Image 1: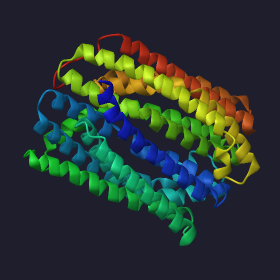
Image 2: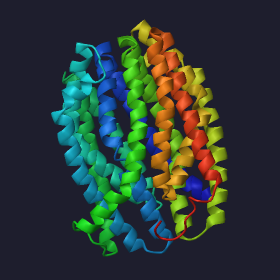
Image 3: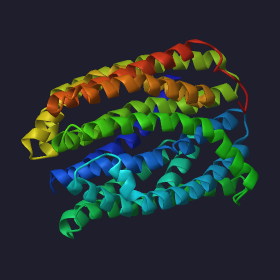
Image 4: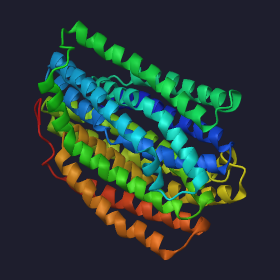
Length: 435
């Protein structure tokens, strides 16, 4: 089983790390345009990632459904469910893109940023809306492939796509002189190429097994309804991230810029830790689909241990580099000082975050979406007094940013404890091809 976990987790790790590394490159490229541009990228990224990541069930839910059907021996049905997910991603992507384009200014205005920062954020956001449908197609296609126990193909797409994104951003921002809009266009072009490649792989597999490729309203509706609990779970999680960015915007422009980079680093670490969670989704769904309860329990315990040690390793790495990382993102001494302090808190929370991510992945793979929806909402409510306490304290500057990240780490601790409590029981371990 260890070999099976590594076979899925290592390519997933490399693919997941590729994205935040290139996002870090994007931040560094934009950061050298000035503090307002970097802060604007932070606000726009918060809105854009929310618009995309609330539909992460297109990947997570599809992985669970496809893996269960694969475990039950129904590969054709697995691919049919995957194609329904692709159609759903197109519909949701177009609707989300229209909404973000129309309401770009009000959405940015919610963060209360300075006029210069807001102007940069709106520019980036309006161009980036063109990439939302391809982003959702990438999510859905990746979910299908993971459910089929294939994490290598998404790895290739990620490395090529995000590498192209970084090169295009550098060319269009500083070479052509398009400023922050150039970074947005680089993302749109790269995401479109990734979507075309991954969808082609899925459709070729479906054709080979004679699975239906046409739009089937019943199948798409079933995918949508199955995704509602995971949508609620994701909305609650995104609300936590948006609340944190909102609180950071009140600390000052330099602190908001530092928070943007700190959150990008945290996301990079989260993606790294999430590699095991993705393996957990695929393996849990497949083993429960095949009726292997004891194997599921043993694999879960092993992956929790691995995630804790991985979190400790990442924490040590960030502690060593916490003064080096800021040098690559800003020449502003205030931004560098605030970022270095925040990164120490980010580092210390990594082992706890590892537990939260792996157990989240196990429960998603098991199809325990309804419980996750309720639980994540409870975790959000528990976070409110923490983040509002920082906001109400009136502490600003570097100290305010540090306390904000302490509060966010408290949220991750509450989340890890809640998921651990659920995983100890047996209610989530339902066997068969459908939950």
